[in-house]
Amino acid sequence: MTKASSSPRKQYNEGCIAAHALDFLGDRWALLVIRELLLGPKRFSLIRSGLPGISANILTQRLKELETSGLIVHQLLPPPASVQIYALTILGHQVRPVIGALCRFGAQLPGHDPLLHISPTALMLSMTEMFVPCGAKEVSIAFNLGAEQFLATANASGFAPVRTHAPTAQLNFSGKANDLAATIYGPRPLSRSVADGIITFHGDLEIGQAFVDLFSLKHRALDGLDYLEATVSHAP
Amino acid sequence: MTKASSSPRKQYNEGCIAAHALDFLGDRWALLVIRELLLGPKRFSLIRSGLPGISANILTQRLKELETSGLIVHQLLPPPASVQIYALTILGHQVRPVIGALCRFGAQLPGHDPLLHISPTALMLSMTEMFVPCGAKEVSIAFNLGAEQFLATANASGFAPVRTHAPTAQLNFSGKANDLAATIYGPRPLSRSVADGIITFHGDLEIGQAFVDLFSLKHRALDGLDYLEATVSHAP
DNA sequence: CGGCATCCGGGAAGATACTG
DNA sequence: CAGTATCTTCCCGGATGCCG
Image 1 (tube, rainbow over the protein chains, first blue to last red):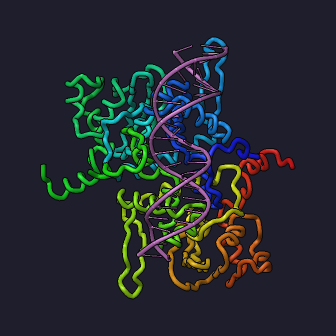
Image 2: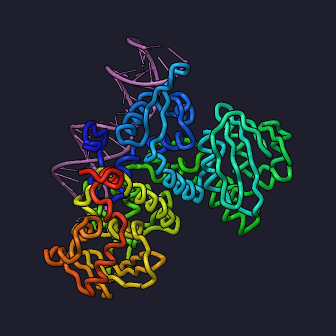
């Protein structure tokens, strides 16, 4: 029983529990599908828009497999809405530390290009992992990233985003996820991004800049190796 | 540059750093190859014997890709030995938290069969993740698992195995990794396993049993869901 | 339009046999 | 022992079309 029937793919038949976890999460796209749902349920299309390059049939297949694995559920919202949504189960939410570990490892790898497409949810999760708490003051931040909005708090214990609708807070960022990523990940100061009008910011600019500077990835922007070189040689 | 040339496989072209990490680790077998090397360098055959089911050509391919990614190195030992070994780089060792997160997630999943093949290294890593420190007394443990031997310490800060040759300690376990796993993961008491002669144990039996009981997976033996049901309903 | 099935081409994984 | 070569199988990704 469990997930024997319609076993979708080759499994590692190992007693190792890490290998057993990969039997559930090892398929291509599987972990990224979970990632898209970690901050709240979504419809098929919204999941897909966060996963550039995935085919509709592959997404259908992954969703079905993850459902039979017990990691997600497929629900039909009551009549006024009458739309189908996909949500993580309690078990599904337990993969968050796996995503977190991947983020922290990925931050050390060369070749990362922050200009590539990033989904709002992926950005929020990345920021959560890269946040370095500093100081005891708590700040509330609202992100309006098009189809998804988040309200977050940043304090000494971390950065915690929650998906909501039309949030407002001390600091307010609006724009496309990719442009926000360029501000968070890249060396671009906050004031310039406001001047560029790519993302719009409302709130205390000084606090906003201090907040943006709390994300460690900022300091090793484009390439882990470049970062090492830069800190050693101070060359252009 | 970086790893552009001979890009071995489809990459997720995303700005998400977790997806970027999966560009390095997402291939089938890749994470398990890293796992086999986490506790020390190995030869091709020893890696392969820890990965039941992998083909020689696939292992060759993965090793080559992981080397160009900068996660492992391929060395030739000096003349008296003159054998080739594969070792993790510093960067490669950073994937350990990813394996750890997978272990802790896998421990919550249903369908785990501790009777399936497990490699000595995988067992040591699983035990490291599943260990629940209890009490302040430090114990040293030696494991003789055939081709691989480990010396470990268990104290309030965790369980830490190191690969060595012919170790001896307060507690000494000898036998096949799978049989040790049955004792650690399963409900079988230590005394019986000694009586069975499947694994042999030397040392204080009481301390040995207390040590074995420190691994949390033991209590949810065969099936995560069964475990949940049992704690809620106490029904058959 | 959102969700899902079917068909097809390319390529990765798996099994086997062979070589230095 | 440490791979390489070849063949087969099947997964992935793209396109198309059905259905609510």
